[in-house]
Amino acid sequence: MTRWLNDQEQEAWRAFLWTAQLLGDSLDRQLRRDSGMPQTYYMVLVMLSESPGRCLTMSRLAEATKGSASRLSHAVARLEERGWIRRAKHPEDGRTIVAELTDEGFAALEEAAPGHVSEVRRVLFDQLTPEQVAQLSAICHQALEILAPEAECDS
Image (tube, rainbow, N blue to C red; front, side, top):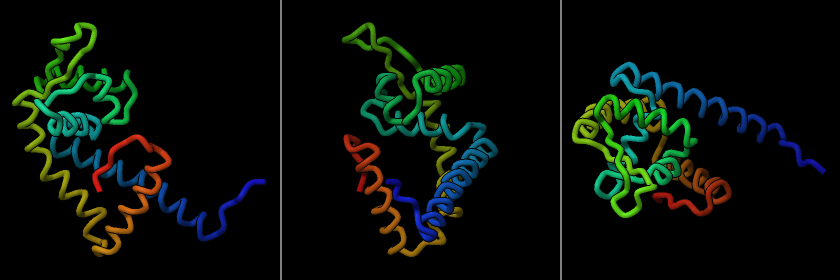
């Protein structure tokens, strides 16, 4: 038997979906306008910047960015054209490709980050109390326990 959403759950669900869509759109618009890159490229640069040696295998980068291999390959190719990423064979396994963030890519990320953080604050965190931020974090982590139980999340 289907457990249908009650009115309160239905309202919360639709508000969540609408918010997630509009938040993603807003962040993408801001990054494109101010930094000339879509949010996908920004996330690739962030993941590489936070990795040891500023590099990851393509498979680990796909995991980290939660994207498909083909979409990631396209993004990395565009970032490589800009000189922001360099791809090379893994030194210990020639079949594996490693993506490395270049100094130019790191500089582009450093330039883009302040505007991105300002937009995240403007559209989300500036309206929330510290208690609401804690609730949002708890709600997201509960969902992630089901959606990605093997993933490590910053708490």
